[in-house]
Amino acid sequence: MYTPKQFEFEHEAEKIAFMKQYSFATIVTTKAGLPIATQLPFIISENDGKLILTAHFALANEQNRYLEENTNLVIFSTPHAYISPVHYDKLESVPTWDYVAVHAYGKGKIVHEEDAKMKALEHMILFYEPAYLDQWSKLSEKYKKGMVKGIVVFDLEVTDLQAQKKVSQNKNETERKRIADYLSQSEVSSEKAIADYIREI
Image (cartoon, rainbow, N blue to C red):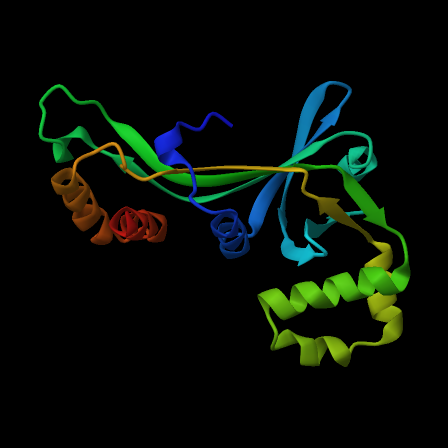
């Protein structure tokens, strides 16, 4: 990822927090020299100093066959906003886009054990909808095992974590306030989020 110094995250923990907040991401894998991609919800965990991303494919998704062969890229990105030059002091200004993104690289490892796959599903339920766990516990073992057979669970150990937070740091304080005030009035949640990031500078 091309990241000018002024747009870098300050701390590694901030990158991880962002990934957890915007955990529906795109995983890109290489097949015969060409990229293939799938959008998946991820669980982000830290174990013994290692950053692990856990998710699952549908069994029919061929991408699972290339997880362990090559380095995968997982892209976490959601808040973004068009920034009009009308907010700048100088007439000679151009439009741009503010955004936040994290790129995680690593090789995947497929989880084969049924119990481990079940635990991965339950961990995902606890993260995304804890209230559903009660209903899940009432499902028959036959039904749950049938579901588990239809998915490919994997862990991806992150070997490189790159990030960019481009939120008008290269503009003066007056311009940033103008941009943030404008975006905060938007009905689009991602634009409101960018306004919050700008105000944190």
